[in-house]
Image (cartoon, rainbow, N blue to C red; front, side, top):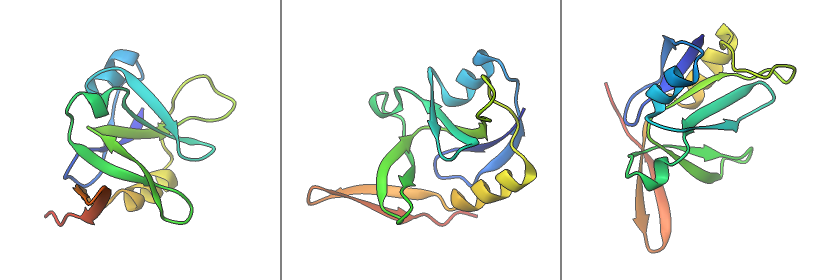
Length: 123
């Protein structure tokens, strides 16, 4: 299946992966956790990434741009149609939309009890 892989401190990249649980777990480094971003796209990350000392990757934001969570470790995005019970390839439009959304790597710091998120410039 065609997915968008997002690693910490890297720009997203398209990749063809198998649709088996083992293939998905290999990318995220353990148990998978799907997070629905919209009606047809799911972010698949490591379920225990926050507790496994994985590096902070990207912030998740609401419609107003306010960060409500941070994804730790490598994750990928794939399609999850409402009428299906499995993941599928992203469309070219979905790839471009989410490549743009997660294009800039981010760094996170704790300052005075708050989390500060700054863009990270990479080549």
